[in-house]
Image (cartoon, rainbow, N blue to C red; front, side):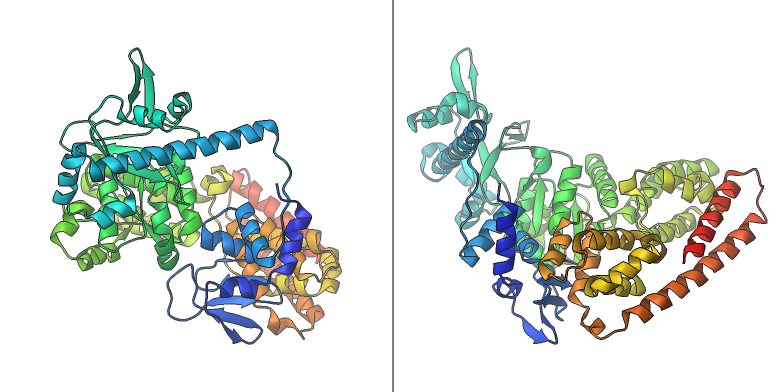
Length: 583
């Protein structure tokens, strides 16, 4: 564990301008430096670095943070690794605490596992390249247009049709076979040790740093099962691994998008065609962990699964995950009967790009697929479609997207919006019943709230006035939490390092984006009269509260006093009057 004071020392010694300049060509623009964002493709610079604040923010994709988060994103590493990289740059030595015996044993065992996997990969590779037993695999790869360079990129190998070839090889290399058994690549039976993979083409599965953590074996004919993978192990958790991520990361950063395919050869076909922002699932359904992993690296995702029943099921399962993650997801559709490998064998890469560019939003694709299967030509069918759509519809987090899809669903079904809402059970009730992480986020960027938050950060004297007025009376939505964090973290401080420590302490990505944008772009507030701004804002809030009370009063006049909505609105009006009295 790296001591906190050491992290602070590194933050004070490194310059974010120097760190970013190692990756991005920057030019001065007023108080900031600007350049082309390394996290998404763009032609006009929208990536800003503020040296005074030690902050970066991209106005194109919303990424923002400090030197540590920049290195984490660029290098695909965690916080400790980023700290160590910047420590080396600053010439600072990090003395980590000594490991406990248990931790030391776990670290040593992990290193043994890594060595065993490397030895196994070298063995499979050697069989493929040099041994007579690998000839069938060499012929197979030639037939599938996989040349030596491409096979080397993937470190393809071949497991010969021998009972214990790998087990014997590992033993000659001094490997403890009991340890190797924990990885699942060899097993012990009544007749001794035997291999998991036999007579199969081998795809090493690597983590995001390129370290081999498991293997996938494919048959060379039509026998089943077509693929078998290493079992779960201390190194390999299939629900958290995307095949090819290490190869895809540079392209994902450039494109700011990722394509997900099902098979290893699908991945290989796209990679061979020059489409590099591709990952594949490792013989398992997409999971929440996969979706979170993808969201850390890309802003948009394309799914490219088979068009059969199983492929559609996988597509719509992924839809639910990405809706929950609030991540734009699209479905790439190829001609019937084609997968990426067969399609690219017959068509130029431009044809695939055209298919990708025509990709439909996944929810739109889902609704249209459902309607094709259940035409809305009867009342029963319309109700059946609504009942299937509504649980997925509720997962749409963005309020604007929900509104647009609601109108489109009603248009396609030929029903009135109020009928859909009635079946939905009331949008407000639904939102309250949803888990907090899935509730629709009603906030949008608010320029006046941006300004008020920036004043709170820039002017320590303003913080006392805000405390006196009350945060709840001035800030709304995510800004309320940010204002509370500023008051709690900064106090009367003007230290920029405390500001970006505050930024790193935020867990909500939307709040991080808001704060980094505010921090990187507040020079226009240098000579502003903050007292006047806060006073004006207070008056505007009072007027809005008055209008809200009038709207509620009008609604109450037409409601049944015994209804739940009447009671809820009455409570809301009382809360507004209380807030208004405090302003």
